[in-house]
Length: 299
Ligand SMILES: Nc1ncnc2c1ncn2[C@@H]1O[C@H](COP(=O)(O)OP(=O)(O)OP(=O)(O)O)[C@@H](O)[C@H]1O
Ligand SMILES: [Mg+2]
Image 1: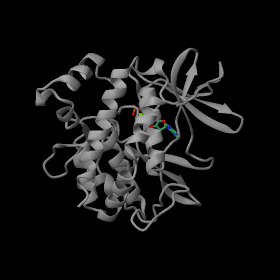
Image 2: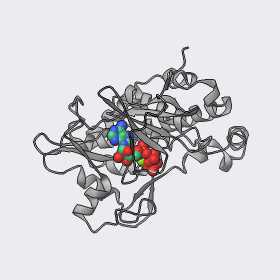
Image 3: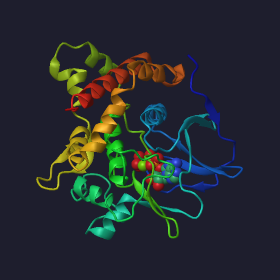
Image 4: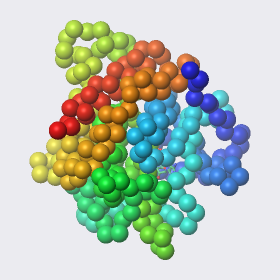
């Protein structure tokens, strides 16, 4: 099986620093193309997590920013071509929530006003279109139905980072308003848990320490609007599904059709120097367990 290619970012190519987000990153140009190079936290595996998430999006036909592994000055990271065409602007979730509600746009985490309901309300903005080039279907017909796909992805890959700067809308005053494709999936797959802990969790007979219990802990940054509790990645998807059951069942059916061998092959394609065997095995098990949990929702 061939490995994912690692691209080279040309030396001295940084053209613009991207201020948003917490990781080191810059924009650079390759001819007409504008790309973002981003470094993950040290030894975190965020580069491979981003690449695997991108490939899973492709398999599920979820509109997404494309990512490739890339090296700049001997440092591994990822590159992603901008999904914002010239003449368009990306409006992030926090800006939108601040327009509609009293909302502190600078508080990214532990933000009780960041309710799932308020985000789903944004998806209902009159005239909001699905992402560019997305092929609508009977079940996945509008921005809300596409966003549901992002939430299913988060549950599948344990992405705990769908905060208010990790989704948005793309605007051109003449062409209209579109949901942005999904991006920034670096905080997925328990990539910050040590190999020692992963091994232990795969081996233990203690159900509470097991990988099955571990996957239940994945939290989303969304809060419940009524009782103020933080939702798990699964509860966020389940709760949002109630607003668009047809879309939810189509996303789940797409997931059902992905053979397990595809996930295995994707993990095999990560270059060996970027991931340990233990992490490969653990992440794959997480993915399989989450897939089964999601498929059990099919009524
Ligand atoms: N492919 C892309 N096209 C257009 N804009 C992008 C793209 N990738 C990232 N961005 C913009 O850059 C910002 C930072 O990127 P990203 O979210 O990947 O970084 P981060 O440091 O991982 O963020 P976080 O703090 O959420 O972990 C995003 O919020 C978005 O505004
Ligand atoms: Mg981000």
